[in-house]
Length: 231
Image (tube, rainbow, N blue to C red):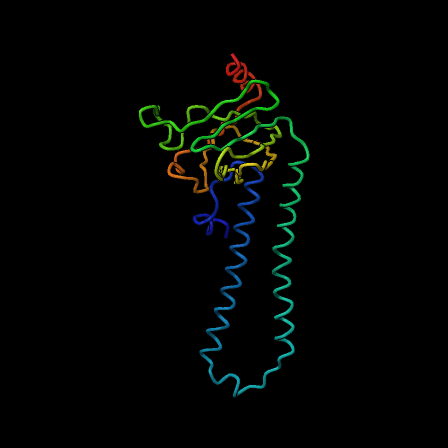
């Protein structure tokens, strides 16, 4: 059933947390599809048998019992995986080895590595004449946010002007960046690669031209990148 709902589900999952989110989404779709199918079948059956209530004696006690128990069971089936997901998300926020401050501007992102003094830069979208072969249009930036793999990273997200939204769909990350408010998120990236996102808050005329690019690499490569940025 998961594959059936995959075409209208979340983006391809690149982390354990996003995989859990994707599974929970598909589970809810399957559950709601079963409820809709059951109600539709009962509705059609009663409409087709318009003389049902006149020809048979109806006992309402069992119907009332089922109408009370079945919704409770459905809520329990949703509550248990939902609370498990929230508990797992809470465990990620207990500890962090690296802090990255993300600031949204009209219309670009600024990154500051708080644990590495002097390492901060702005990230602008590449224009068409700057793109290299294989780089996606309207998604590639001049300075990627490079992160180490298998490391708990705390993101502190805020805005320098209007409301923005720092969103990376493949990681199930979406946090609003608001001026004067610091939103925190701790995340662990288990997969190497380059992951793309965009501002998902309508923040002005160039709202669709402030992409997000996270490059997850090995710790040794991350250290070499930091040294190159500081030179």
